[in-house]
Every structure is written in C-alpha cells, then in structure tokens.
Length: 286
Image (cartoon, rainbow, N blue to C red; front, top):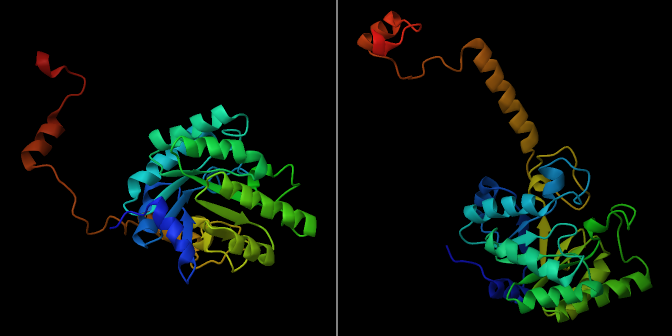
C-alpha cells in the first residue's frame, strides 16, 4: 500500500471530488479504516466521549491520547495518522505546545497533530511547524471550548462572527497548517473559506462544499446510543453486537456453544496420574 504523506493530503485540494477522513481510536478500528482506503485517520479527542464515557472531550489527557495514538499507528499501513492534542496540552504556552506535539510524534508515532483555535493559536502553530511537525488546524465549533460556547452550538451565523472565523482560517493557514477542520458552521461560510484557502478544508457539520469530510467512527457505524445531526449511520452495529452477545450467552447456558467442539484431552495415562495425585503431599518426598 502507498503511504499517504502531508503532500498527498495537500494535493487532495485539487481533486474534483471530496475525500473522506475518519477517526479511529485503537489498533483494530485503525486496521479496518485503513483497509478501506481512507487517506487520513484522526485519533480524535472525541475518544473521551466514545471510548471513556465522558460528557465532553475536555477530560482527555495526554497519557490517554498518546496510548490511543500509538495503538492506531500500529494498525495503519497507508493512511496519514493525525493526533488530536487534548485540552490544555498546548493552550498554556508555546513551550507546552511544542513538547506535547513532539510527544505525539516520538511516543505516539503520529505523522501530524491537530489543535483547535484561530488567530490566538498562531504562535503555537508556527512554533510547532518550525520544529518540523505538521499541524492541522480546527476552527468554528471547537469542542474544547464547550463551556465558553455554552455547549455545542453552530458558530458563525452572524456577519461579524462569520468574518472572524474566516480570519481565523486564514491565520491558521498563514501560520503553516497543512489542512484545517471546519466544524459546525453554515455551509455558505465553509464554501467561502474553502475557496479562499490554498490548503484542504475538512468539514464536519459544515455543509457539502469542503474539500473533505470527517466523521466519528462510532457514529457512522451506529455503535452508540446517540447520532449527531451531521452524521449518517451506514450500519447499526451496536444492535448487531448486542444480539450476537445475547446469542452467545444463550448458547453457553444451553451447552450448545461447546457441543461438538474439538478440545484437547488428556491421555489415558495422564488421566490416571491426575486421578491418583494426592494434592496434600509434596511429590519430592514421596
């Protein structure tokens, strides 16, 4: 399989058809996504919600994200693996941003990192890029700002707010990002940003005009109890898995599960030895 590089992703900007990106959080899901030919896999901090059961992405830690990223990287042969930098791993200072990004490359075996924020994140993005680490930007609805935004709300609905997001996207590009996620913004705004940027835009809840689309692995496969409005379930694996586990439980209880199976059996001599064994006696003293 051909290895996808940063340059490969940049070139997708000029393709006539949009490209698909997807999240993955472990070795097995990464293998499955990679085999489908998805060019970019994001180890999203959405793992906090779909893997760890938190209400938001905010609790995800560096240690947790590093472990998940390394597992995904081991399962991938072709796709570009991008690690999502968790809340407060880069906001406090340029130095912390560089350290965290470096850990994802060295310890997590990622090929790039993603961080949220626009103009105010330019120093961090520039510094990380200057260290030789590719950065994916993220503007619009930024989940790590859940409390500041009073929840997951569509951003950029007014002229002033839309202009700010456009300026954010341009600033992220100028800082050296190789691509940018546009989340939760009006389709018209996403279309304008896509037309003005030279780097690929990847939409999630941002309409049909982005260069690519990204979704959460669990959402498109119907593995959870909740499906966001911006997603589509291509399967309902959650119900299928539950039914399969219930059938397994029934087959074990009825004896059907073990019926006719070829198990390893002791030889007749070994059975006699086992039957004659006195577990209260030290065999060395017999």
